[in-house]
Length: 101
Image 1 (spheres, rainbow, N blue to C red):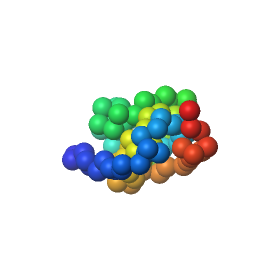
Image 2: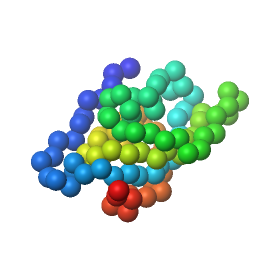
Image 3: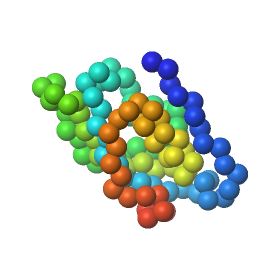
Image 4: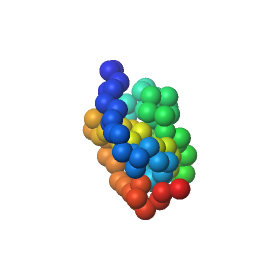
């Protein structure tokens, strides 16, 4: 599997400030062999806190994770683009504008 290398480039100060957002992402069984969450850290420089997870070999839909993503606004945006390109179901609990730190 090729890792998308779409990093969002921006020169605005807003995109370089640290922020956080909370999402729920469902990873289907066909991607269980892929290190999806690990890539958020290693390729997109986002700190990931798993706040909840539902995993089982018997779940027909795969597994779901509630994640808190921390990093710069541009890194979080790039990480979300990566998840979207994998065609994963993603629910946003908050936006980076709401959870800035």
